[in-house]
Amino acid sequence: MPFLRERSGAKGSPYRWSPEKIAALLFVLLPFALLAARILRGDLAATDPLGLGAPGLGGPGLNAGLGPGAAGGLGGGAAGGLGGGPALGARPLVETLRFLGDWAVRLLLITLAVTPARRLFNWPKLLNARRTLGLGAAALVAVHFGLYCIDMGSFSVVVREIVLRIYLTIGFVALLGLLALSSTSWDGAVARLGAERWRRLHLLAYPITALAILHFFMQQKLDVTEPTLMAGFFLWLMGWRVLQRYGHGTGLLALVLLAVSAGLATALLEAGWYLAATGIDPKRVLAANLAFSYSIRPAWWVAGLGIAVALASEAALRIRPLPARRARASSAVT
Ligand code: HEM
Image 1: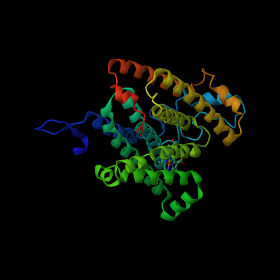
Image 2: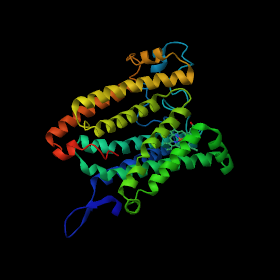
Image 3: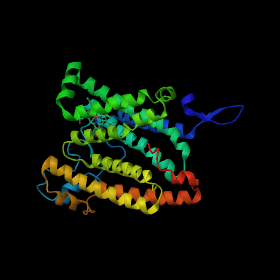
């Protein structure tokens, strides 16, 4: 299996197993394994095996925090999305489609996290995992789309829906972008396009992920806890690239400021979305961030994780410092 191997540099056996590639493949297979386990249990009711939408994050929290009369309640997995959905018997195909859609977004973000992680933890070989993770995300999206087509039952209906429903149009554009990246992810394509053109083409990963998150937001009926969380992580990832471009990608203070800014931006985004989608007073949504007894809102997770990453990176780089040249590197942050 050459795609799980890396160059060893040894004369006799030039290739050896790559732990990063193997771990990436296992990670890509995880959603399928979780899905199989749930199918075997006859349970596709809880759409969120990571517990991201459990009461701690999405459940009754925001609803309660906003007080009575908040557009019929924002939490509690209102649309069968985050906090639990219709049982397997109801619409198993749609539940599977949602489940794989959730994982596709997570994998897209994890793929974008490879570059920061390799620098923040001085782990250059992590790059070996990126292609597998990206292709895995594309495969999940392809199956997600395939299930949608099966659910619709006819090609003409699929085309009509994509043209008429803006959230599907956005998802479809993201899908086309992912196909373009996947078809040029092989070594041969890099050689044919040239490194610089290939790099510029693969910058498309950023708008594609943004479109995927927008698609996620738009298809949620009321509770946008998980899309907000994903958007917050995306903001952090983009912010890190800006820091890196200016040579501050591994500075402790810069990373803490980034975490706080990304958290604030997440809170504002959430309030702005609810204002636009439901007309709820943004002050009430922002206040829900302080109702800790009900839930910990996405803004806190983004800021908290960002600070944890900053501290972990500081510790890791003390043990294994970056070579001076790489620490100063300011470009090539894809
Ligand atoms: C990069 C591309 C895409 C990604 C990452 C993606 C991801 C997602 C996510 C995360 C959800 C929400 C799942 C949930 O409610 O928990 C979703 C829902 C959905 N997606 Fe996509 N999607 C993509 C493209 C598409 C395309 C091309 C189509 C079809 C043309 C599509 C059709 C749907 C439908 C119909 C739903 C809503 C299912 C329902 O609740 O009734 N998606 N998608």
